[in-house]
Image (cartoon, rainbow, N blue to C red):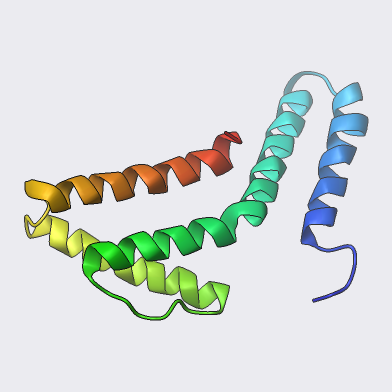
Length: 126
């Protein structure tokens, strides 16, 4: 959609409302819940801002690991599904012992670290 406000603007507006209006007067459990909501909104904002980059990088890493040079799906939902399928293929290779030793093991570990780092970037903002 091209309408405004877009999803990011809506999230930002709700987050600002919680930070400036709700948190200022909240106490106890209500304050805690408002802070949790602010943090959740911040995570969603970060995910929206980085998801395309993270998905593209994960697609490329998985393709390299699996020797699959298929075209990147153009729609985000299709890309997520294709990544899930590639991840399942990787899991099967790991279960079969293919990552127990050698250079491929190091590549798998590097992929898992990069994927975890991307998730932490969204979760923590770092």
